Amino acid sequence: MKILVLGGAGYIGSHTVSELVDAGEEVVIVDNLETGHIEAVNPKAKFYQGDIRNREFVDSVFDNETIDAVIHFAANSLVGESMTNPLKYYDNNLYGTKVLLESMVAHGVDKIVFSSTAATYGEPESIPILETDKTEPTNPYGETKLSMEKMMKWTGVAHGLRYVALRYFNACGAHKSGEIGEAHSPETHLIPLILQVPNGQREAISIFGDDYDTKDGTCVRDYIHVTDLAQAHILAVKYLAEGKESNVFNLGNGVGFTVKEVIETARKVTGHPIPAVVSPRRGGDPAKLIASSEKAKNMLGWKPEHADLEEIIASAWNWHKNHPNGYAK
Ligand code: UFG
Image (cartoon, rainbow, N blue to C red; front, side, top):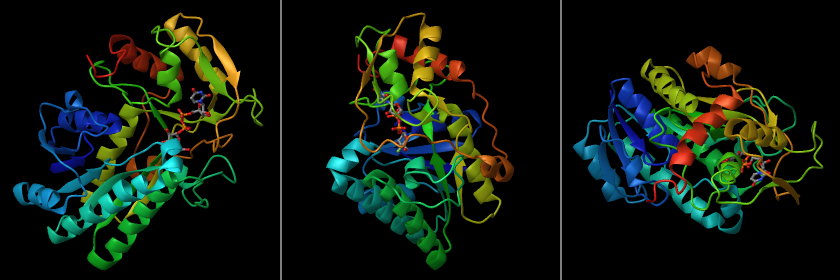
């Protein structure tokens, strides 16, 4: 199959491209390199630099390539930024997807797998979270991702397009080669920030609140290895290629770790004492987010293979210690 990966130079996109290439698929990458990195573009894929909001550009890619399915990662994904600059999220995430879907419909490309998020749920009513639970996002990032799901649903009703929305929980870890990994600027995610301490880039890690109703007072999250996420995209493309109907799947390990537990595991992995300082809560953080991924396991045949937190952090450390500044030299 020839698969178009939008946002293939980003964190989860580049890991998915790597798995696709290893599986023998033909891959075409589109990325505007706004948050993606040229160094993360897989040399075995064909690369077009451009923006999905540009209809002419997107049309030209579909004109040049006979695409069987699209995997769509091209979006902004920072919760905090979405609160201060919501229209950036409506523009890139929603308008970008609208242009993409128009071009797909015009070119008869009818299968798309895309990055959705646990942020579509908002504050959960019960744990673990099921795909059928209520979706009430508490920030524009989650809101735009939920609207992207709905845009695909109604485009499907009108034009026969089928989609799989993958609602990721906390993506983390890095490729086993140590050649690609997480590189955000600014970095806001817990594990890379923790690892800046043993890397000598930060004195201590801040714990955002220790008065939550959890076992040690810090927030609980479901950390899922990026390579396991990547595998789920391949299975989702296969699912659609088999003619199955549009669907939504959670992707997580179904196990929650507190912020303190993640820091403790990082101490063990790195052998560094990693001082931690309790700071005020960060606005909009739910106390506990844990996925039920039974649906993905049953319907996609997905099975996370790197579920051990120590292994996840060791893979991240293998990347960060050799690339303390991400892809920058
Ligand atoms: N945290 C700290 N200190 C830090 C950074 C984070 O204590 O320096 C805490 C956060 O408060 C949170 C946990 O670590 O409790 C994880 O935070 P991340 O920022 O790593 O991840 P989030 O759970 O906030 O966000 C993730 C994804 C988002 C997605 C969201 C769904 O990164 O894309 O889950 O709620 F939207």
